[in-house]
Amino acid sequence: MTVSFYSAEEKTKSRPRESDWRLFLKLVPYTRPHRGILFVSLFLLLPLAIAGAIQPLIIGQAVSLLKEEPTWYFLADVSLAQGINILVGLLLLTVVTRLVFASVQGYLVQKLGQEITASVREDLFVHVTSLASSFFDRTPVGKLVTRIASDVEALGDVFASGAIGVISDLISIIAIVVTIYLVEWKLASMLVLMLIPVSGLIIYFQKKYRQANYKAREELSSLNSMLQENIAGINVVQLFRRERFNSEMFRSINQRYRQEVDRTIFNDSAISATLEWISLVAIAGVLWLGGLLVLGDTITFGTLSAFILYSQRLFNPLRQFADKFTMFQAGFTAIERITELMNEPIEIRDSDLALSQKYRLAGREEPQQGNIGEIRFEHVWFGYKPDEYVLKDLHFTIKPGEKVALVGPTGAGKSSIIRLLCRLYEPSRGRILVDGIDIRDIPQAELRRYIGVILQESFLFAGDVKRNITLGDNYSLAQVKQAAKLTNIDRFIEQLPDGYNTQLRERGTNLSGGQKQLLAFARVAIRNPRILVLDEATASLDVGTEALIQEALEHLLVESTAIIIAHRLSTIRNVDKIFVLKRGELVESGSHEELLARGGLYASLYKLQMLGT
Image (cartoon, rainbow, N blue to C red):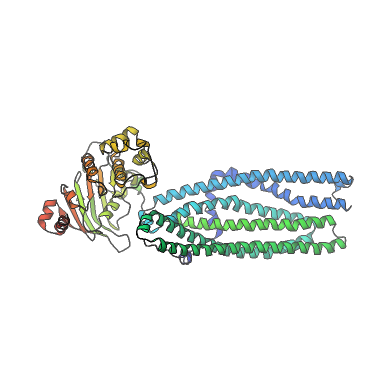
């Protein structure tokens, strides 16, 4: 197992960054189905901010009553006890108001965040599963899992604790600033002036946090990629004693991840420390200037007491703002990474003709006519990398109902032909026709229903046997049993603990390789395709099971066009035609006897295999 990971710094050097505002706007469309929740959440911020702003005034009035200083007009003619009771009642009312509204608002905001997260995750999953195979060839699975799971989860915080939280803090700050200016403009000006350097420091540290957070998430993706690869290939790791070597590689990536996380912690802590220091300076400033104003009889002790509370409350929203902004930046990083994934082009799309369904392939239930099941490659060139062709100028026709074998040395391009036929990749040049129709003009779903593919190693999903045969299509249990009977695997399934309802583990690890392959045959048989592709499909079966499958294949291949990839040349003697490939080129074609008589590449390969037996 060879793993190559690059540091996040190398990957992000040339990455263009979008502004926070543009990133935020990408999420706005997801709020439209939930406009009601959003508007109610925003409306509740007003009474919350007003109630929070008048609480220090109420406490200040209580101090003024105790000091026998001037108070609000409705407290002037009441006794001390009555005045205190009135103020306690008002304070209790603001506390209850904040408690009720904050609970409702918090619930609605969290609900909105989860709705947005779910919608983004669904769209991202649909997009990723629509990408071409070439994307997955170059993208580790662990990175995709990190973006779809971890990064998307951070999006909920952008709205739940980020955007609306920031708006809440801003409204609280505005309400407090307006209130203190109405009470005493000199003390208010001093507090507001302190906000300027604090805001500058927050913005500076937040930019640093954003950069560190992006790199940390990139390193986390690398960490998950290596973890996934080692778990998937654990047999190779242990058989070739790679535990220590891979552990060192993992330790190196883990160390880089820890270093980037440390940088995010430093920048986050710097913001908290700055705000704490400024808050203490603000209280000291209020005591100094307020004390002078009290001595000059400009303000009362009650007003000074209120401003001491305001100096704390003014910086509390700012502190919360900074904490939410940190979360906000993490969310922006997630949006940025998800946007990169969403911007991956879907290279293989249905054409306008395919979408209009102008062309449709005939199914088995329809009467045969014309060239049903014909496959034609017209001067097809293909390479996984530009200008590195693995298929070169392939030009051939497979007639309806014809059985054709593809043979050749490893790397000759046999599997690439199958991938092109199923439109998992697009030809670099030339075109491929099925029943005389360019496959680019056939809906992908219809093309893949028309072509049944059985690979050498079949993938099974976690779930029961029946679901692994139907793969989500609406087939009845009777149809499933019929397909199993047709492929001679009904006895094997009935011997399982719960028959067709037997639960299979991930990748079918509770079945043998041969049993998994048998299910793959039933999976294709139930769909009854016109074209059947066998990519070394019986290689993992024992002799007895292979005999049963060969019998089943006789039923499947009736009136079907078939392409068979086989390395054991003795198994393809009876096909109608054999295409011999070498370095991506078609060098020979003909029947088994014709190719042997010709004495070319096929004859050489056949003689080598006969010598080895």
